[in-house]
Amino acid sequence: MGVRVQMEKMKCFGGSLSLRKSLIFYIAAFVMLALALTVVTASICDRTVCGIRESYPVSGEKYYLTNERGERLGEGAFIGNVPAVLTARDERRIALLEVLPTAAAIAYSVSSIIAAVLLFYRNRLKKPLAGLRAASEKISDNDLDFSIRYDRQDELGELVRSFEVMRAALADNFSEMWRQVEERRQLNAAFAHDLRTPLTVLKGYHEMLLTSECEQTREIAVTMGRHLSRMEAYVDSMSRLRRLEDMEPEYEEVFLPAFLSSLEESARILCVQNGKKLYLNNGASDGRLSVDRAFISQVCNNLMANAVRYARDAVTLSFSLQDRGLLLTVADDGKGFDPDSVQEAVKPYFTQESDRSEHFGLGLYISKLLCGRHGGCLKIENTADGAKVSAFFGGDKYKK
Image (cartoon, helix red, strand yellow):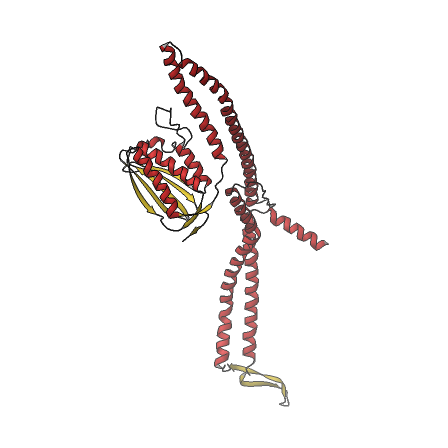
């Protein structure tokens, strides 16, 4: 029982040490061990050398003590000993044993430092670092439903506790953010729904005013009708955005040549209708890819509609396969994006046009939303000849 109590005390003492003191403690303990091993090795080598030398008989002239009668007393003693001639094998052994303590001291020192560092890492660093790495991976995956603990009172213990405080704060902030987002979506849905009834009433009055015999009244009714149409389009866009935010891709395996050909045909018709030329670069003309047709088609149509609106003469549509996904790029030869608003272009209801009667600035926002849902991204940039928008769609699987 007493040994167990002492072990618990030693464990608590080690857990309360800082990392610097703990490392010094580990190194000092192993250096002491290395010193003890060096002394033991040197002692063993000395005894072994003495044993080898004592195994050879002593040679030289032996003198004896005698009494008055001339009788020898004792065993006698050698004076002026002649060193015994060692064999070549024993000479090599003695030379090795004389060098061995120095080599052992160096080896013990290096080994003790390495062992101290490894043991320090295993006992003081490995567990908290593994926990922090696993926690970081969970946070990167938007998983905050966990907790991390480390009971030692050292620097890493403080770091782990700070990390746990940060995780809890992030979880609270995310919960609050999602609550606000959900409230906003519900508010937008209620707003769009509640607007339809007064709009219907106003449209009825608008139609009545159009039949008035007063010319000024009819002119006012025409202006009123334009604004009512714009409000209806705005309400419809809010409802459509809410539906898109809830959509998830439905992957199906498509034959790329046929699918890309249909996208090209739609783009070509749009260009002909707007008097623009279409150039095609198809680097993904073979194979099958598991994607959502509707997502890609809608993004392609949105990007082409934007491009033909701002292009001077031509639009370039490109397809390529990258990272087992489909990269769709639309470039035009127009004036490009305003450098100060490139990052703002993907926000909802953002547009550089002064007339919003038909264009609400939702095309790029919807495209970015659908690309993100499809495991991809949307990139907007200006080029030397105009503007370019790249949409990447992560493919579920690709087959040759």
